[in-house]
Length: 360
Image (cartoon, rainbow, N blue to C red; front, side, top):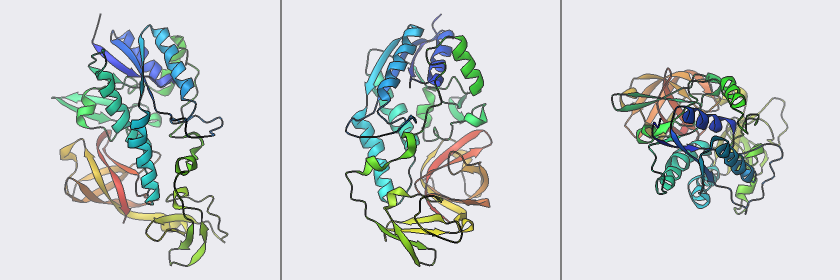
């Protein structure tokens, strides 16, 4: 039985390995694909934490190779070092230097993993129909349209990170784990004797979340830390080391906890205040990616998620012109962060996403 050719993105972790295993069991003709993005010019010290971008990539490639051997499928390694630098690292640096906090994972999925990686594999001799990954999300197909939905396992749902994918990208994508729980995936890996069955959870962008190495070629000026009235409270060590909502490592003594309220790039200031000052009633967003065109109109209601670990909250769209929107939340939300992605939901369906410009 052959259900068609599928390229499977293998990261060296258990999720992508199980995705490949399930597809092979279903009769698909597979090739395992692993992208290489690490640049040895960086000197990251990530300790025991493992990041997507880091020197441990060599270990990940070897794990992916072993998965392919165990499944008896071909393994392709695709170098995207230069592309990743241009599309993700440069974007990441520029956003931080502008006083914004970007989401490199969403950028990578859209531009690299489901973009340039797919394009490069298509240029090889493996003419595949679908590209599959181990993401926890679901795709629903109805009347020549493709809809992105949350995963069955809400605790592992990754629809937020996939919200930048276009409808054309969804049309060739597969997420075999979307209807499974993490516990079920781990059990499948163990029962199938996959070589990565006991691998721990993968980490985020950079293990340890220390981004300072990425800015070693830039001059990062220090500046004033001020309260919401403009009174100088101390000095900050550079805007790139702070984000809205941050409480720790502010270097300021205070009778009450202080939080970052805003990064003022124009005046090179970090503005701090009390917890209650972090709450805002709405936001503006641009760079929209609309997956359900009828789902966003002025006056429409939806649920908005302003970061991965945020519980979606009710909101109403006040203004929408196709390129940008303004929305008001049912209840004020804390730490609305310029540069981060806001994802719009209608229950389990992803309506679209955008990049937060400012809180209101």
